[in-house]
Length: 564
Figure 1 (cartoon, one colour):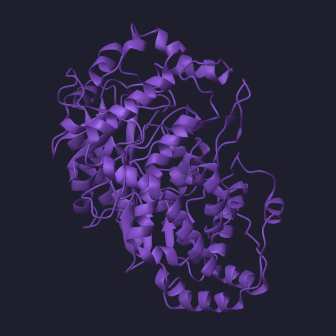
Figure 2 (figure 1 turned 135 degrees about the vertical axis):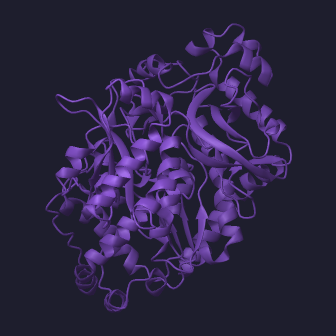
Figure 3 (figure 1 turned 90 degrees about the vertical axis):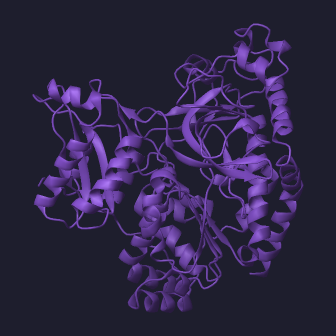
């Protein structure tokens, strides 16, 4: 414990200079953003993309930048990304690409995001003040080790045709190299866990180390349902874990329906051989007692001081189930962090996560006036919702990340932004233009009334293509409500969606079939398994009220669904 305290104090001290610069910048966001833009322009001059903008080398101001460089999207940069994957130099930036990270996979093919040293420095400009604020504001977090999301990667690490590495395993990869050994010393779970070949063994070994850690102080995950599934596994394998802790061994159970990870490196035994397991008889006894009395996290980890997780947009539905086992532990919502860059970071005392004003250059589109010039950070208005454009030293310029944020207030002079969902999450099979925001609103107002007062533990709408029938939407529900109630919920959803002109027109023309409800079991676990099969990392998977990928009926039927 003393070692952890010293390491965490050293970690806080290492972040202090960057945190000080960030807090000074909060008083002068326009100046900070001008400096960020200057750095990004320098990183992208004399590149292939710079030659496509007339007078790029003469750009000095934000307005000149907006006039010279068009708004970009993933599709528009695809050619440049392919050139980079092939090893071409100076395509987007003057710096070489050190690796690619994969983004997406939930509703289609993953995007390759180029990572440069400049981009990693920009990540650290946000992560350092966040980590400093966490350790400085919550002293109890410095009293013991932490669990920071280590998730199986769900896709094989490899190299592009040009020899550039693809993917990283741990969140610590976004911190400077000199800090990574320090971070590994305060982690309760070894990073090698991420190399296990299937989700269940990864969870089991993670739990072994977590239960063994009596002074655990922080649990940091991304999706709250990731924590729920982890604790479900603790209860499911509790006695086996207790036996293994008692003996100082680790025997992950064989999953009869494994969710294999293409990123797994070797078999379970090969990965376990890199780890050390020592007998923990006292922790084994405590685990048995806690499980007998109804599992609560504080009984197992009395020093646990903070849960860090997504709490906004659709993730909000998953917070209560995750918190059920951690009554009395403070929850801090995470900021908006994309693979392409950091938009906001949480600070204690701010009304919402604060814009990462020293990291990248930001612009904000008004969805109600998409033709208007995007606003700058200092021009935003409280209560308004905007779509984010991002420019980074990784070479993405005026890049639409598709996220909507609402201004909740200001911290000093810098806007505080709450993530509201995806601006581009629209399913359009036959012209119905069904938006995720609309589906979320309908489900939130409809399901509790239709299903006995509570929203189901899992609810999702997704399209389905069937032979000899028009495509249609399915409402997947995990609930004990009767079949009659499920059918009525499907009818109510259909009526609500028909209030939209495009959806109603598609139904009237017979281009779309009616909504049908499908009962699922272990919906969250099955959802996670398919998202991993689609290429996502387990810890990064976001819950969705509307998933645009088809094929969920067949997937859930393998795991025990029932059509009412």
